[in-house]
Each structure stands twice: as structure tokens, then as C-alpha cells.
Amino acid sequence: MAMDYQTILLDFDGAVATLTMNRPDSRNPLDQAGAAEMVAALAEVQADQAVRVLIITGAGEIFCTGGDIKAYARTKPLEHLDGVDPIIELIKKCFALRMPIIAKVQGSALGGGAGVVSMCDFAIAADDVAIGYPEIKLGLMPATVAVLLARQVPRRTAVDLLFTGRKLDAAEAVAIGLFNEAVPRAQLDQRVDELAQTLAGQSPLALRQLKAAFYGQADQPLERALEMAVDKFIGLTSSEDAMEGLSAFMEKRPPDWRGR
Image 1 (tube, helix red, strand yellow):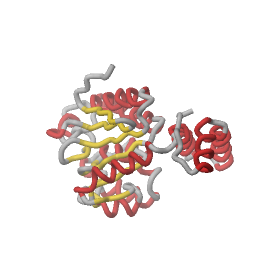
Image 2: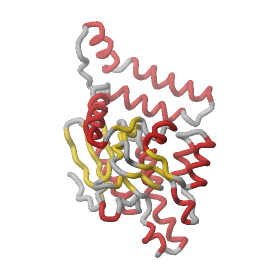
Image 3: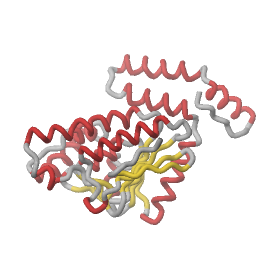
């Protein structure tokens, strides 16, 4: 049974689910309530075996601005910790999700919003958006977001962005690897749909194993990383999808994936 969400929308269209951060009047903040609902939505998507790709986007002109600064200013210091756990859980659930996640960045992504982009496996943006980490300008620091950024870009690039708080335009974000692509705004929906359909057409089992292996080995020593990758590969070679993929290639026909 679908949940009644207050801060997000969750829609299903065949093999593709779309999660929309839906508080445009407050610039789609990533607060405790929003993060908790996103975690619940990920569980709902994970349980639906028909879904093979998830798109995350924002309603209105802003993708996500991260924390609600006005609410933050009214909160006692120790109460700030209450909002951290749902965000940490959201990060973990995104990387553990069995399918690829595409960030459709239709508006600026700042602070925690940039973190949401980094939680996704792909990021396609409109070419007129900005991304940045402005916390330092408020006398604060990005915590969980900085951890994600340090794993995506070179160290000096991360230090530049975190210490200066400057915004990047979409072209620079592509150049340093925060976005995969930046396309004209009028083409954003089409490009994201194309990518989603491409991913939905892959073996769901192979994608699940590849995603788990890719992120699982990323922070491991080389020897352990190789072992993990080979273990996943060996397990996959005996699957029905692997046999179907090879048969379809030899028979020059589209594969009929079973996800097992």
C-alpha cells in the first residue's frame, strides 16, 4: 500500500519510479521530515520488483537547497543532531538501492541539495543551474555532504568548493564530475527519460550486482577490492540473466531479462 507522503511525491511509470522533493515554496529543503520520507520512499521502490530505475528531482525552480536555515537558526545546538540521522540513513539507502538512481537537476542544488546529487548514480542537469556548498558563508560546515564530495572529486577541488562556498555553473560541474551531462532545459526531461529507458533495458540482476560491487570495493585496499569484484562476477555468470544475455547475443535478438 502506497504511503501518504507530505514532503515528496512518488510516481511509478512502468520500470521507472520518480521521487520528487515537493516543497517548492520553501525551496525543497532537506530536513529531518523530508529525509525520513525519502527513506520510506526508497523502501517502497526497493520492494516493487517491476521498478528498475529511480529518478530523483525537485518541484519548481529549485532542485534542493539543503537544510532549512530559518528553522536551523531557531534550533538549539544539540537539537541539530536530531536531523542528522535521517540524512545518514538516506545516504546509506541510496547507495544500497538495488537499482540505478538518476538525479534530474532542474534547478540549483545547494548544500544538502548538492549532497542529494552525490547520492545518485547519475546526474543530468539543465545547463542553466548552479551547484555549491555555501555552508562556510554561514559560519557552518557541510558534514555528510563533504564526505560524499571527497569521494567524487579530487581533493584540491573539494577543498576549493568547501572552503570558499562558491557556486559552480553546470558546465564546470560537468568538467569536475559532479554532473554527467548538462543539457538545454527544454531537453532535460527527454534526456533523463532516454537514460532511464537505457538503464531499464539492462539486466536488473547485473545492475544490482554491479552497483553493489562498485560501491562496496571503492574504499577497500586493492587486494580486497579485487576479491569482492571477482566474487560478484562469479556469482553473476551462473545466473539466468547471464545465460539469457549470451544466448540473445548469439541469436541476434533482444534479451528477455528475468532478474535472476
